[in-house]
Length: 128
Image (cartoon, rainbow, N blue to C red):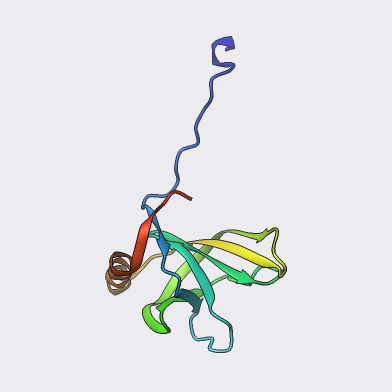
């Protein structure tokens, strides 16, 4: 037991797919809700995405589907999501939050659209 003291254990990476930084104009929004403002996509992978939005409280994202846009053109629609983290960022004038979600079960069409979106609109791989 004493032999284990001082050994550092590294946390296993939970993501199965690399995340890629999104282009500046990429956005996400809730499916079927035209009244909400779009949220700014930070990064995306085959397994999930992260986005930022201005609000003090977390979004009610239970049983929600989201759409991914570039230049206001829909690229992937009705992605089922599950919130992994939603935290308030510090240092800004306005309350800004960063939300990370993982995708639920995707249809074959959604998988192909997501793969195409990532391939055509990604920038460099992102570690976070």
